[in-house]
Amino acid sequence: MRSNTTRLDRFISAKLRIKRSDVRLLLAQKRVLVDGVVATNIGQVIGPFSWVSFDDEVLQNQVARYLMMNKPLGVVSATKDSRNKTVIDLLPENERAGLHIPGRLDFNTTGLLLLTNDGQWSRNLSSPANNIAKVYTVTVSKPLDASYIDAFASGMFFNYEGITTRPVKLEILADYVAKLSLVEGRYHQIKRMFGRFQNEVLALHRDAIGGLSLDPSLASGQSRPLTQHEVLSLKG
Image 1 (cartoon, one colour):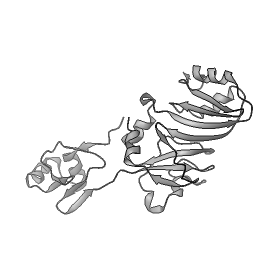
Image 2 (cartoon, rainbow, N blue to C red; image 1 turned 135 degrees about the vertical axis):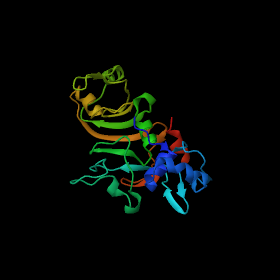
Image 3 (cartoon, rainbow, N blue to C red; image 1 turned 45 degrees about the vertical axis):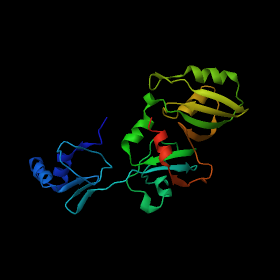
């Protein structure tokens, strides 16, 4: 996994285009601040959201950002697309820079989508090892019965990947509607699992990720920043 941290001497060297061996002198002269404190250690670890300055010049001042969106139907979960509107296009222009999408949703899937510029937080969300459940409501074309519950809980073998899916909890809400909870996100996994029953998925909506539920006040296409509590709840 690629690290998003670096040593202070390497960071200053790259920013000021000087030799790393020259950074020690700048620190001795007390010309470098990290998060408002005079830096003294060339090996100090600098993260993507560390505030760093040299003399009166700010070298890095990036703020961590976390958003939730109610993704609408027919919008691509991508930062750029030459043919279709993306979820980034739904944001004000001054809020788009640097964001990426952990846990993307398909073109025709709606609901809770997260956007961030924090790569470590994103990797934490996406790792099946952290067992962060994603909860969906699905509407299908044929009636459901108890056989679905057992089949989803047992996992299904996907020949293309050569893997068996991890157990998926399925709760039948109505004849054609179910709620699913799963901790991985294989390619079109939910549609493929229902496909084993020749039961077409007509609508798929993500309700929650871990303990974070979609804000019911958000209309389709709207977004808002996560609270600090919400961010921490997904750090695992």
